[in-house]
Each structure stands twice: as structure tokens, then as C-alpha cells.
Length: 128
Image (tube, rainbow, N blue to C red; front, side, top):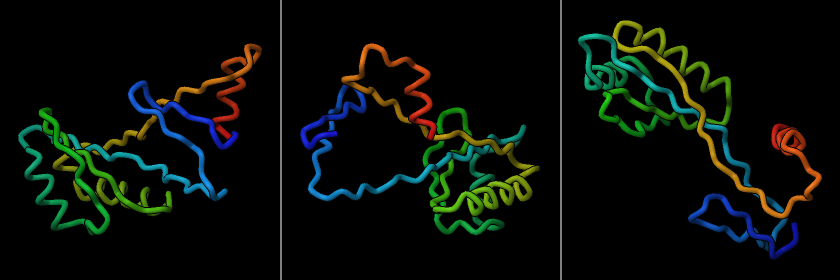
């Protein structure tokens, strides 16, 4: 990339990638943990129980949609810590909620690619 290249992240925003330094901060791969209340329970029961039984340091309750499921993010750099937190929630909340996960995703639009480049080539580069 040259210093004047622009990357279009969504159709509403364009970010200029021109920087004076060569170091780029790598973002963490966060996943959202979703707690769906079992029958007869509410999100209030889940949050109260989570505060009592689980260490909530670094835990962010992102939102509670109208469905009543609690969406939680654990801020940590290590995958092992995140997995441990998820297993702890499964063990402690098994009577109150079903525990699931959802990866955060971003839509990236790539501009100025050769016409001969195929979709599989781009996927391989992104996955590595």
C-alpha cells in the first residue's frame, strides 16, 4: 500500500490508511458470549447469578435485545482465558441459561485488484 491508499470499510465510511509509522495495532479476536434464558427465567436472574458466582472482571454486558438473551464480551488477550470463562459460565449457569458464542465480523471491501484474481486467492490471503 502506498501512503495515499484508502480502504473502504463500509459503504458509509472511508478510512485513510496513510500513516507516518510502520507499526499497526492488531485488534483482538473477540467473540460475544450469548446467554439465552431457560424456560421460566429472565435476563435479570442471569445477571444476578453471574455477579454472585462468576468473576466479572473485564466482562462487558453489551446488550439485552427484546428476545431477553444477554450478550456478554470478556476483554482478554488470550484464547485460553476466554475459553475458561465460557466453560465457567456453562457450569455455573446450566440451570438458568444456554450458553453460546458468536464471532464478531467485519465487512471489508477490497478495491483495485487485478481482474485475474479469483475469490479463492483473496480468501487464502485473508485466512493466513
